[in-house]
Image (tube, rainbow, N blue to C red):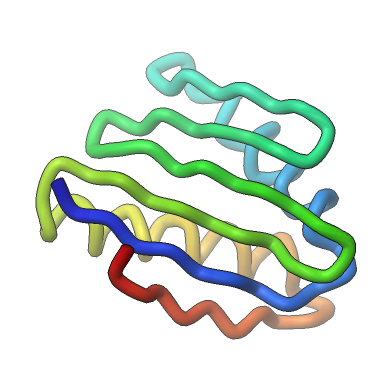
Length: 96
């Protein structure tokens, strides 16, 4: 397994969490769960767990291999940057 995490400083974390989960829930191949400040997206290559606090959106990725992890990081990066275009987030993935 390969894993990474990222912490994005933003006061809009729960909004972005909701947008990501809502967006990916339209794909019938993905299982998505959403609670108030927590979400999970199950991709074929791995899982993305999202947690929002008042000032941070925390992301955790668990994938089956390094190649899948890189692809999933890229997918999450692109979508989050699209949703957060008013305050482009700095996303720095760290090995978990």
